[in-house]
Length: 173
Image 1 (cartoon, helix red, strand yellow):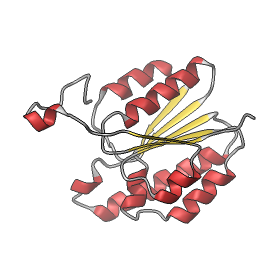
Image 2 (cartoon, helix red, strand yellow):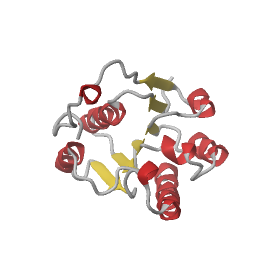
Image 3 (cartoon, one colour):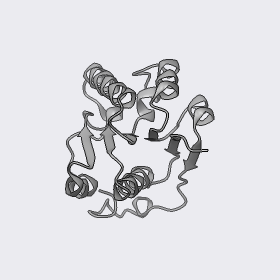
Image 4 (cartoon, one colour):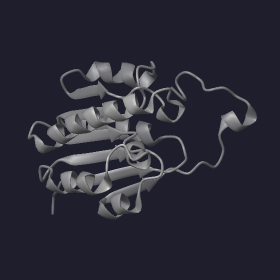
């Protein structure tokens, strides 16, 4: 049986977005059309975004967040941006234009109650039958994990930040 999969990368460890990017590149390598939507990261410059530019017309990349919401100066502005990004994601998932849609850092919209879980699950259930949807972010709710076809939990075992080593270009961003 072949069908579009709902895939969730969650957990407190690093690598959720990187794994989703790897999946997007793998799909693009097979000629699949990919839409990558980032919900939280904002305008911060990082390596993944620079790499994806090389896949123009194969991977459409949209940065739609205002930055790290948990450090927000204006949570209402962040909520409005999240709702706009979610509306865009809904249109994208209900279209027939993409083979894969990645919703990066999406679980935070649910965690911070920016959008409700039940309508989200309905959109996932009603997406195009062969469309793969990849979701990343910490603390994915149980109902999302239950709805998913594949779940990977990234676990933090050891990280250089705990030893006072700052985030490094090419590794952390």
